[in-house]
Image (cartoon, rainbow, N blue to C red; front, side, top):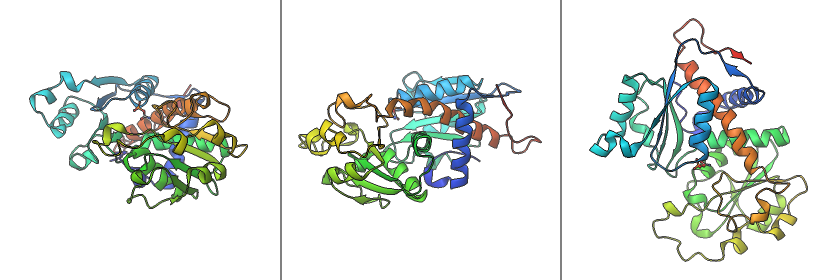
Amino acid sequence: MRHLLRMNDLPADEIMRILKDAERFKTGKSLLQETPKFVANLFFEPSTRTRFSFEVAEKRLGLNVLNFDASLSSVQKGETLYDTVRTLEAIGADAVVIRHPDDEYFTELQDSISIPILNAGDGCGHHPTQSLLDLLTIQQEFKRFEGLTISIHGDIKHSRVARSNAEVLKRLGANVLLSGPEEWRDPLNKFGQYVTTDEAIKTSDVVMLLRIQHERHQGENEGLTDYHRRFGLTLERENAMKPNAIIMHPAPINRGVEIATELVESRKSRIFKQMENGVFVRMAVLKRALESAKLNEEENTYAFYH
Ligand code: CP
């Protein structure tokens, strides 16, 4: 079963295949759907980019979209996540996309649900499609990962983006630097070396900023002040970046906190390019998921068409 749960489950050759398919979708290709397919999107946490880029991706692939609204569902009557997903499977969903506030919510599902689960973000755990769209953006810019210096800045401890990206970037040969407040260091993130914000910014090919995850702080770190001057990408720090270095941020952005507002759409910024790439990457992971459902059939790959 080709669930997509964590980046560290994906071998490098599968990652490269997904990025290649995403590039093909970017040229306008789609898939030939012989029979109607249904994909259910279950978002138990707020989302703009992931939710709507999945929906655009599904519609571009000719899939039927089932948008699940937890507030109008039987979750309100106490139905469990497992029973909810099992119900969607029973009524004909061919895949489910799930965002959930609990770390690794999928462990109770992955061996019992027989349709592919695409993780759209689990608590502080993993965000594989964000990581893949980040990889696509870096690959488009530099044509490689090996030897690049990539710094990840800010709320490392609470960030599923940091966790997914640090592991895969290190595995693909990048030199990963981590930077930010001491309070937000992640003892579980062993894939990068901590350095000061200034050192990280002046040595990096990619400056990857993170959103401060206020909703996961539970009252801790409330005293952290003056973040932008101490740890953010100020205009002065942007001037110290390498000439061909780029700025990334998964968004949503806290303007004037993680990044000076003038830099959000500046020459070095690839923030909106990341969002654009999100649609193509999500088309590619949906293709991969639906192909896994065809493994028992004669034809197990989808044909592209214009
Ligand atoms: N980057 C990201 O996951 O954004 P959303 O929370 O808006 O989906």
